[in-house]
Image (cartoon, rainbow over all chains, first blue to last red; front, side, top):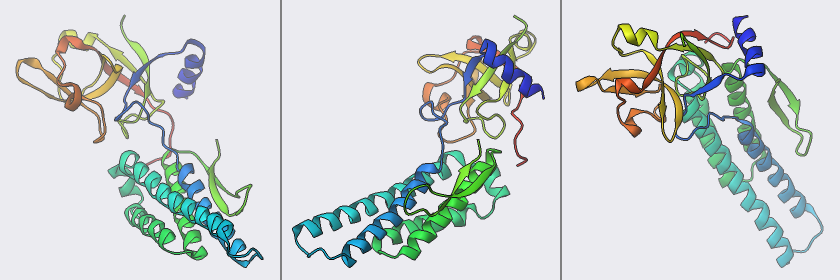
Amino acid sequence: MLYQILEKLDRVFGFKHAKAHCDIPCGIYDPHLAQIAALTVIRMIDLSNDLIKGGQKENLEFHNTLTRYILVKEEHAELCKREVRVIFGDFIKKEHVDKYPELPTLMHKIMQLGSKARQTTSRETALELLGAVNRFAEIFWEIKGIPTKKVKAPYKPEEEIIYPVL
Amino acid sequence: MIFQIFKVRGASLAPQLEDGDFVAASRIPILFRRLRPGDLVVFHKPPYGRLIKRVERIGPGGQVFVAGSGAGSVDSRIFGPLAASEVSGIVIWQIRRPRAAL
């Protein structure tokens, strides 16, 4: 109640800021990048499978395209791990782990699935990675007190992701 | 001024203060008592600007060591202790954004 009044006053008058910043003034955390990265891994596996099942001959062009898909899969699996690591390391506090005891196990699972997504071309693994990252996102937004919804990504591979309802 | 309201930016004092919370800070308590560990203080520190941190300990000669809650916080570990005179206010009131119970 009082907060809402201050928030309105702030919009009108703009209170001065006092920074409680970390390494660099930032405070910007969002699991969305990790989710996009996990979706990209799935998409690259799909594209690779399409290419192999397609009629194209195994010429240089074929190998070039396949290599590019694999490269992007590698990069995004690693990016996914990195984004989750930053949130886990910098944003998540002991209180959050006490409240969500599954967090360390979930974090470890994402690290392992991220590596497995690089080592293999298993769509199941990539889906599992997305599932774990979605759960991580769900907890993240819950900690922030922001509700979430599960929706199909409006682009291929059209898998479900957790979005904050802002 | 009796007190001044600030909006907290950043999360280095989480979970006590989160990004977007408001605080009222005042100089008046400092006129009557020494700073002590646990006080939330507002101060100006170039090149970082106006910061809010927690007093961690008071060193010899009244040096004020401040820290955030997290390991990544920019505080006395980086810019050293403050002189008590650099502290422009103590937080006397916290108005937190309504949030899900932790």
